[in-house]
Image (cartoon, rainbow, N blue to C red; front, top):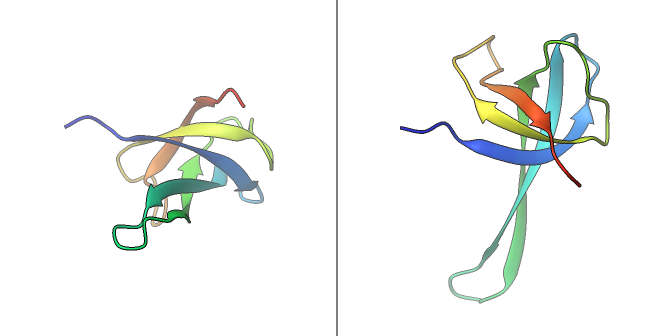
Length: 79
């Protein structure tokens, strides 16, 4: 099974080697036919502390790194 890759914006870089990434998805509501925005936060491993708040990044699934980290930063995304 392929690993998922998501794109989002870094909302926090306070912890060492960890960034919090806010991923937003848009979809059409099945009944109302209205576009809805939902967002979810993911904690991702950032080995070199390279990314700061406001950066757009791509994250990929990985084996658990800690209690909350299941993702790692793949690269900076083109904004």
